[in-house]
Length: 131
Image (cartoon, rainbow, N blue to C red; front, side, top):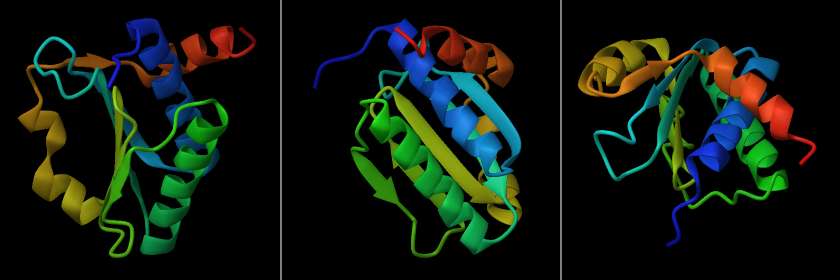
């Protein structure tokens, strides 16, 4: 499995953020974990208000990144929709319900990673969209 450039990973993370915002995700956060893990470059974390919205958020991210040329490698938790994990390789998207977001607290677990302003990645995606 070939690792993409950090610029490409940032672009795709930005696209994931756009898809989440378009479908009214709450509390979108991004953690750059490239310096602390080989799992991925970015974790994008958000939550939805109910199982239907959480599934719709996952579908929107999958569709937007797929159309941009980044296929989904694996999805976990879709049926229960309390924590859906979308693995795109260097970008991993976590969509929670509020209870499980507090319970698993990925922001605390991955505190050694660098918190990134989601708007910065979104702007990066918009700049490179036409390229």
